[in-house]
Image (cartoon, rainbow, N blue to C red):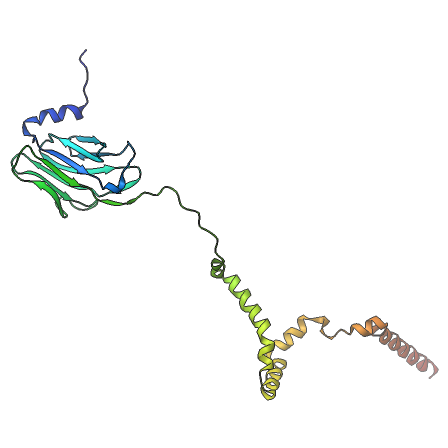
Length: 235
């Protein structure tokens, strides 16, 4: 039984007559060192994919790349990298362009590097980062100013301010204005509502504690009614 080889290893052998001896090296920024060993770069086309692992020099190397148009991407656990378009031609050499996801393939960005018809030379292109990946959201600290964002807290502060500041405001008013203000409160539409909702407003607690009040009134009223009845009987 013949051994089976994956298609990704057979197709590059087919295109060997159309390959360049030029090496494509992708350089990462020095401030990103060190990166995890799982970081790698790929050259993707419709037929196959070439993969290059991360080297100790913080770079990736692709040697003897077959002719064609490739999408070059760098995968890392910690950072996002800008994708690039790599055009490899046996006669024109290698051209590297910046590309953007979602755009048409023919819409090229800025030229990032390349080489002309020279052979046996190395093409070095610096990869640009888009940002750092964040897997966890930092816990926000407590700030008293965040309480002022609550409408209920603002209403409570306003009510306390009115309760504390209203006596000082009334003391600073002249007597005539203060008298008009008190009369407007008594004759206002809320005066009757306040009296109706507060039945204890006219309650005389001193008279209730002395034992006088409604009980005496009820006794005297009963006596008057009884006397009136007797007078009617005499008549």
